[in-house]
Image (cartoon, rainbow, N blue to C red; front, side, top):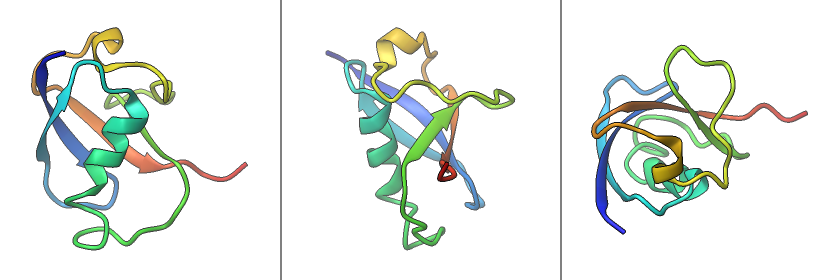
Length: 86
């Protein structure tokens, strides 16, 4: 378990945010933490599942994947967005 900095780019927000998470946090936990300083302040809450993916990627990271398993670099940017209902 170690503190790990990520850069957060939430769809609809105008600025990147620095978020410190734990290497053992899942992407679901990271997504929840990413909303704390964005939803209701810079982006309206749409409801639904928030997903994370690397910039330029089309597929999100699995919700149960940990930060360590994702092989992310310190301060790497992740894009967060509401998953469309299927």
